[in-house]
Image (cartoon, helix red, strand yellow):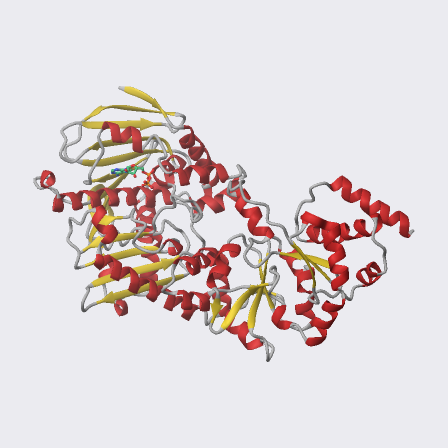
Length: 622
Ligand code: ADP
């Protein structure tokens, strides 16, 4: 016998599960059955493809039994692949995925908040400790002789010892605690299996004692041992759409999506012709917890002729659609298709291409319902925007699907709707980027657009800085960043230009005063209430993008200097024209630059100097 310690993160996870998943404790059974089903899938695949496993007797089934009384137990046994000693230590003692680890770090320790988070998360085997004082796992790997028993009370350690098991597979026995004893009952188990695991494609048998009645309906003393299959065990995706009810789809989702909620959307397709395949995709109501981790868990499983191949291939669908859950089942792929081949397999590529179009098409339909689509966008707007950048082929559809905040509407708008609101001679779509919506809405950069009644999209996500400029155009309309120097050019009138020309000598004097601090000083009629603003040169990154690149560790960026724009009609600027060269003039010029930087959310290099200048100017004016 050997004693092992759980990895630290396992202890954290155990603690969290026990303290925060309280109200959902029945999901432990879903997780254990799902593990058994995976183990059966794995063995099925090997017996079909690997010579070494050809002689293994594959008789797939999951058996659930329980004992009532003082010390109730619940046992889940499968005839799946099983585990050897090393795998037991690895699989039931550590958490391999770094996404899961960082998820745990994110939890607050506040059990109410955490239970919302953790509810959306596949908690797996460890959830059995919610309902059990101790857990025993007896397992024998297919093709191997030795069996092992893993035991733990979930308090830091587990033990492994040699054991006996007649056949390959795994038996998990829970010694139920006070919270768990309700699960040692026929109807409770039956209900949970039907709710979460009805469409697991292997039979699940429940063993129970039934009281025997005599002809008069009186209970006889003795009971009879009975076994009943409790799930329907069909590959639901293979059935025709009109045979299935919404509840069938939802039921299946709850098992493969590890989710207690119903999905937002499901998309079921049977394709026949050049390629034969079936897909069933779901959009969960809430975004999966690991959506923004690099090692997120792939949500789509690949089957070939109903045989499970993999649930760990992120290439099955594009990265931006990583929130999808579901299955792809192909009739054309060979069973022993290797992982390397999967990556460049032309059949899979075709399935992927048509599936993406199908999913986007369904999302367009969803978009006809504003309320529902807003919900969708709230959860998945970010990955969908990544799609604009990654999926050139579907960019047009993705642009139609994109939603933005804007200066003219409450809530979100599409580009189609923006187009309808455009002013008669407006030739471009304008947007402003930055990190804080409120600051953006108050930015002096918007003054001219407001004055001319032109709508500006308000993009306040970091990602927008990279993605939106890469789009270029929507229909014939160029997308122009208000944060850049040339965006306003095409909106200016003759009289605007005349006003700008009139202050040219002043502009030159300000430039001399500011020297190397700016790239250029320009007159600009884009402002009305503010005397000045800064913008980025056409090809330079904007202030926000520079900040983002720095946060990504690109500290060696050259210094991009801003362009200072001066409002020729502002009273301060008009007065400045009459001021002689000298220190007071220089100070005001600098303040025009510094206030514009502050409004853009930039840090001043030397705030003390700024305050001194401000005080000098105040002193002179009071
Ligand atoms: P997950 O199933 O999400 O990977 P779990 O904590 O539920 O996480 O299980 C960890 C691992 O233990 C599984 O990935 C699998 O390798 C192994 N395992 C769990 N249950 C079984 C079982 N019944 N048969 C074989 N292996 C199992």
